[in-house]
Amino acid sequence: MKIKMIRVLAALLMSFEVLAGFAVAQEKIIAAANEAEISSTGKNFPERHSRYKLQRGDTFDISFELNPEFTQTATVQPDGYITLRGIGDLMVADQTIPELTATLRTAYSKILNEPLISVILKDFEKPYFIADGQVARPGKYEMRGDTTLAQAIAMSGGFLETSKHSQVLLFRKASEGWYSAKIINVKKMEKAGNLHEDPQLHPGDMLFVPKNRFSKVKPFLPSASMGAFLKPY
Image (tube, rainbow, N blue to C red; front, side, top):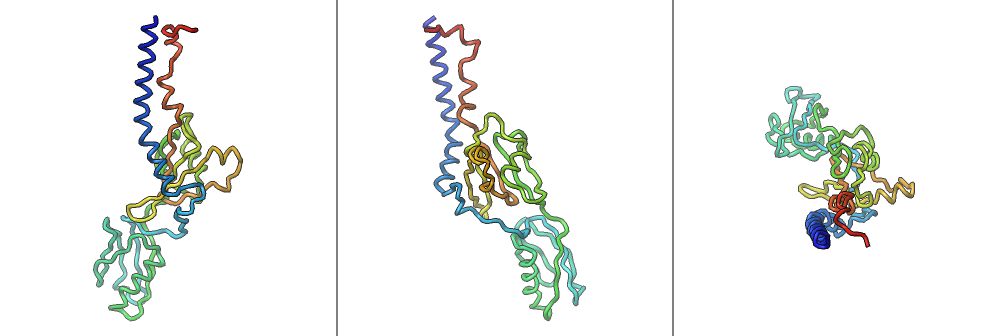
């Protein structure tokens, strides 16, 4: 009986060592977020931009009031450029419509006298957020108005029992190829009933809910069926 108990305990010990390896990646992400100053104050977290910025694949109409021969439809290419009649290639990705209008007027001023230009979006990326990790329905969700982190979690089905409510990560694009991250203690926020710290999501944000420590250990804890191997003292 003692030999069987020793074998069970050894197996459990090996399981915990394996789990430690699985936990490293998650803990590194959280540690990196902390090092980059990503406390609940969010001082280095990009602020919300109210105007839509052009994305790759967006299509829009360009109308010329006094020079209709230049009226055209343009699509933002994968490299961020559009090709304009009489002008050629022009970088427009990440510009708002007012910024794009000003860019077009500057470009066409080289061949037209004070061009009157208007821009109308036709087909564009609908605002969305991504929910991942320990939520009931991970995936990509369309934003139909202002959406907070708590609302986004609810839209994705809410927390699983394996979730770590106190360290929800919110990722946000800061610049080309770079993302900022912020750790939100949703558990504390909800327990206190204080939603003033519930951040508004930006289009393209991703929330990630990590696993709690118990959920990593639970599959390897002794079950009722193992009781026969463990002699009570």
